[in-house]
Each structure stands twice: as structure tokens, then as C-alpha cells.
Image (cartoon, rainbow, N blue to C red; front, side, top):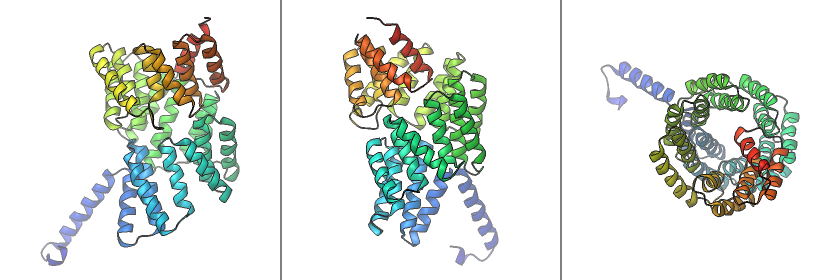
Amino acid sequence: MLAVIRHGAAVVVAALTIAAAANAQSLSPAQQRIVVAEKALGSNKTVDGYNELALAFARRARETADGTNYDRADEAIDASLKLSPDNLEALKMRAWVLLGRHEFARALELAVALNKRNADDLLIYGFLTDANAELGRYKEAEDACQWMLDLRPGNIPALTRAAYLRELFGDIEGAVELMNAAYDRTPPSEIEDRAWILTQIGHLAIIAGRIDDAERVLTDALALFPDYHYALANLAKVRSAQKRHGDAVTLLRRRYDAAPHPENLYELAEALTRAGRSSEATTAYRDFETKAKAESAGVDNANRELVFYYADRAKRPAEALQIAELEIGRRQDVYTQAAYAWALHANGRAREAREQIERALAVGVRDPEVLARASAITKDRR
């Protein structure tokens, strides 16, 4: 079109340039990566191009909690492997996608194989850390994370993973220190990464009971990345702690609108209950049960929330235990152990429940909800 424009051509070009820049600024970091990668692939289909596109979609999945981005990442990985079967970067991206989809056992199997192939790859040790931690294999997770730190001291992926392990082991202040170090090393241009780290710092402040600090840092996260679903969820916890239950509902509704997953609906239903909006809560709980049951057989599920719903709200303890047994057969992380203990407790199996919650607490976890349920379980001397 520009070729046939004579009068005012410079003005038209300038206007288009300004419009393109404005549009780019409205895109998230991951969206910008997607645009660049797709444009590059449009003229030259390369292995590196498809790997970059897969990475961009995986990052977009974290930004939005929209699992269809993992589907798009998988398509790019398949295209990369078609061009170069068994190329390492594509297989690493596959491990990333498996973790994002909560296919932790498969992710671990792949990460172990990749680690044997390349024992000095930092990101592969990150995958080993993540998969082992999610499966409750904490010694193995700790060892893999230490390898990351040994390979490249002070690297950001290792710092954030080490912080998560510190949290699980009960060292909240150590976790905060590591997250702050990661934040200081993260470039200002990586706004979603910085918002995610701020959200984790806010989460840790909530666990430590520093509600004012949590409010401040979570507000900063949302200023940096508006409507960020992780930050909305944690700021809602702050509002609940402040007895501002109506505000918590508003935040969790915004979060569910952005990331409509069953576990997010469950937290919204709980907030509606605390706000005294019982009719809305009943509807939300009913919708949650329907959605959660539909995906309970899959690995990416809301089974822990379903256990609590059946045990506490629906008063159907046998169903709570059935779901808990299904999930504990897949993974033995502290949160799944705590949910299983609660299901045993709801079914009157007090001794087994105490034994199970003691295993979870032995890791060191200080999550307030876990501790509250543990207190009720240990008091039950049936």
C-alpha cells in the first residue's frame, strides 16, 4: 500500500511506526516473544525458531494460567523435533511443558534421561528440582538445586527454587532472602518474572504473619503486571486476614475470570462463604464440584480442594478419602500428604491421620492452613 502513496507518505509511515510501537507496548513479554518468533518462522523454518516459539508459549502459560498455551508449545516442539529428531533444546522444552501440565512423573523421567546426556546443563537440574519437589522427593530436589548453585553461583533459576525448598523446610526468612536476591538480579525488562518474584515474597510474608508487608509487595506486583492471577490470589489472602471479605471476593473473582480453573473457583466459594454470601457460595461450590470431578482422573486437577470440599462442606467423607487415595498414589508432597491426612481424619481413622500428618510436618512446612488442620488432627485421640 505504501508504494502507491505519494502525498504525505512520510506521515503515513510515521503513523504506522507509532501504532506498531504502541501495540508492542500493550503486549506482555511472552506475547512479544511469540510475535517475534512467529515472524521469524514465517520466512525461515528453523529448529531454533520453533524452540524459541515453544519457550514463548510456555512463558505465556505462566502469565495467564491458560493451558492451551502448552498445547501451542507442544506443536512447536513437535515441529522442531521433526526438523532435528532428538535435539536437546526441544526435549528440554518438552520437560518444561510436562511440568506445566503437572505430569511430574513423566517430567522427572525425561529430565533424568536428559541429565545423563548432558550433566552440566543448568536448566535440566531445574527440571529435576521441580519434578522431585512436586512428587515429594525432597532430598533429590535439594541435591539437584545444589548442583544448579554449584554450576553457576547466584543464578536466578536456582535462587527461586532454593527459596521454595527453604519455604518447605520451614526457613521462611531464608526463603525471603533468596527471593530478594533473585529479584535484585532480574532485569527490569522482565516484568512478569519480577512480578512473579514479588508475588512469592508476598506469599512468604503472609506465612510469616507480616500482612502489611505482604500488602505492599503484592500491590507492587500488580502495578508491575496488572491482573496477574498469582498476585490477585495472594492479595485476596491479605484482604481475608484484614477481615475485608468483600474485597477478597472481588479479587478472587477477577482471578477466576483470568484463570477459570476449579481450584480457583473453590477459593472464590470459600471467600463468598466468609463474606456471608451463602447463596452465591452454594452455587460456586456446586460448580466447583462438577468441574473438579470432571478432571479428577487427570494429573492436572483440583483433587486436594475436592478432598476438603467433600470432607468439610459436603460432609461426604468416604468420597474425600477416595479422591485423597487417588492423589497420594501419584505424589507424596507435603500438601497432598496433608490432604490425605485430613481425609483419614474425616473418616474417623484418627491414628492413621496423625501418622500421616506427622510425615508432612516432619518436612518443616509452616503453611497456616496445613498447621491448622494438623492441630485438629493431633487433638483427635479416637
